[in-house]
Image (cartoon, rainbow, N blue to C red; front, side, top):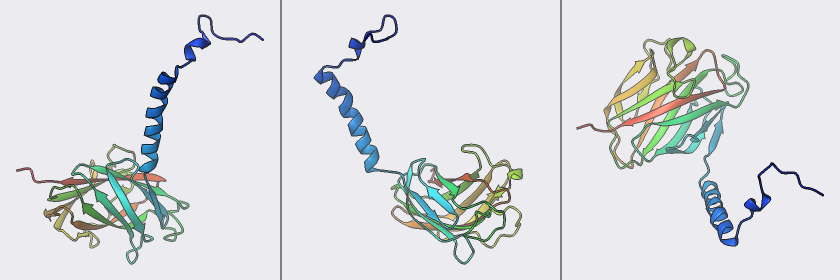
Length: 212
């Protein structure tokens, strides 16, 4: 039977000598082994999941349902003083103001516990919300750090005395007037509201180091 092949193309060109085959296959096997040895994890709790899939940090735990009494708690380890992005996804049906835990309802009391494993002190720490990765979350998209509340009483940190919020053109929350030394853990508490809930959004975390 005649084997069809493109004109001018020889199947002999696909043949490998044993040495060439080893050089081609071994790096692939090594890369697969490396990828399997350090998988990215997804932690699900309440009506959401939290993932470190975009790299640069490691989630070590997640708990809670998202109420003020039982907030969503994410524990993390940051190995550098560069921005990292937490991926947040709804794992239950979306229903604005639905029952907490049963629905992704757009009201999320959060606590982030971050271990500073960067070998540098952090003198500020900023969070930024994004509905679309790498694009600012503008005022009108409904996603914010509780922008309707002009005098919030649910924003606090174990290591920083003050905070500032920005709502245009970014949704940012900056903790300041404090410090997190290397190998110490800082706690951040805040409320995320999304009045047009989405299946996926992002929380950028940016530790700041001394500039002088």
